[in-house]
Length: 204
Image (cartoon, rainbow, N blue to C red; front, side):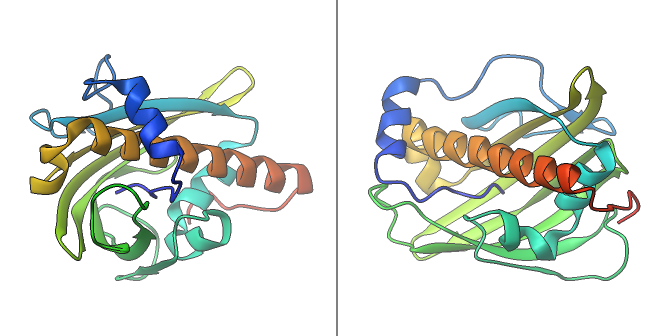
């Protein structure tokens, strides 16, 4: 599940831009051969290039419990296992629901499990998000690859559930805002750490 940005203006604006589109076109991302839910109506994919070493970016992403320190939309995060972030690792985290969406919940409680993972290359996690009057099942894939100018980080996520399926454009707008915001925060945090010369072991 992504970090949903609580923005009153952004959600309806993005919904208008998307119109009835439920997904961005293109080949689905995968991690160790597994991808997002192909039957999901709510889907979004995006990417950015981050001018920082891969190990810095990977550590930020894999160190789940520190997400709130660099993601404004993550209000809490805890690992439910110990040791290196790996396939099978589970984590609980919370994120606010934007106002003006018609969803009564003020926040979502999410329990995600990393199903596939390759250190420094990709991760795919799944899990439910629950709040008052809402249930969402999410599948989220991340790919990391070195390119000219840094590291290309690509992400794709799908959502299913009665509430999101009932308003696909709005749900896609929320997903889009969340993923674009996550990438912007990751880019800012990674580039700041790289500039400061902070160490970041890849094995975290």
